[in-house]
Length: 346
Length: 290
Image (cartoon, rainbow over all chains, first blue to last red; front, side, top):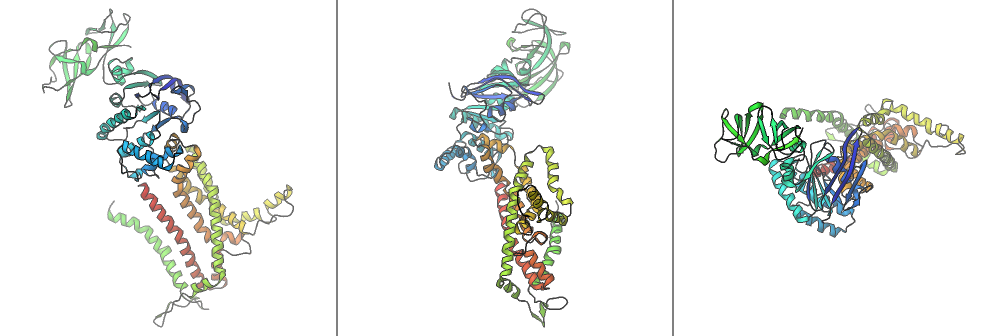
């Protein structure tokens, strides 16, 4: 197995009366690109600070390649962090920033220089070594922060909301840069983010944290297509939720609408939500009769608000392939593939 | 902002400087170039019989007589001592205040500035009560049996340095605090993350980033200390007088206004140099940071 495997075992952390992490367990495979996804207050930043060593857990253990990190100060951990604000040292040049961690290791000046220029080439900043941080653009500053953290050759690289300070155009570019660095270095990357789109697009594993617990860990497809809970389904992507009650094995009775066939099996008579992603819904001639109440045109796709019988409202997202759109007031048929309906207990 | 308003805002301090520094200094310079006479005013006019009568004779006299050079050196030495002492005491104070919880900082800073509510003269007099051979310190140490005879801490240069350190300490603490408080705490985390132990974090991050405050504080202590008059007058010994005292003597005892003015000009020139140096360093730092 690749180096840089992180194991979080039953970690709890309280700040005053508030339990920020409540017995969290999580395994991150060495060499993976994992996103720690969560809303603010989910505990993802606290977990990051615990792994970096800035805080100590109240309970539980954090193991890196099997070694317990308990009592090991941040300056001795084989873990480096790219700060959200980058935290470049303002009084040092780009080269001195990148070489800072190497000098702390006691490397000879020549070796530091060699490694610094290697890092500058890696993040494509050759020629900027004498600049001061204030003379850098946001994208350049971020790459210096990356180079500075990677220069230490950490087993694990933590990235704290690395795109938050970048404008939209730069984010796309930075994403592919991060993927390239991860491919080239094979270091474990752990990305902390509240942006589900970023997590899905970048990471090969996503761990969704919800109020101090691990809600689900899996591939981006697992979280989107097979959410383990209502909370996951709501946080990752958009979803239509229709309340109902399971009747026999494979159907849910929706009051006023009828019965929807679902793949999952829950005890008969339990209150549930049926969840359907907007892009799984077909609008055509057949299916549930519905009326279009609103159309939002997004260029590549349109989002329709549809009123079904029994006061049920759903949203459908359709690609605009032909330029033909359903119009407000139009009566249409609504359908979806049987596997697209997800069921969650209420 | 409109050009007029901007010119007005720059104009206010410029006018202030011209009225209360530029003009008096021009007058002092004029007097320094004249000769002392027993008259009213006690100096010769700069222009008489349609000719310029000024000379550098007073400056030449200052160079000839060791008394003045000694006074300048003694002043620089005592001011430097007070500055170093203020730095040694003030930096840890500022660092401790900057490190406390936010709600404690304002009251602690108010405590640093608290001595200002009492008259400066009274506070220096209080030091006489502490330091004189029959004063509090000497008596206490004797009654504890730690020393035999009375302790003569004053009048002396040590007492002067002590008095100036006490007087100017807040001027060191406040600018250092201001620069420490501005440092983003995340930088210390970043340094630790990159392998710096706490001591190394201080030397490589905190201290260099607080240097503008150290520089400003040192100037605020050093510059007024060099020309200090009250503290050496009250606590100083019979040895080499400080330059402020010499200027006073020339003005009021010898009634030699021109020589006193020349001395004042030399003192100003001496102090302008470190200020200009600091200004340049500040500009360089600002350029590096922006």
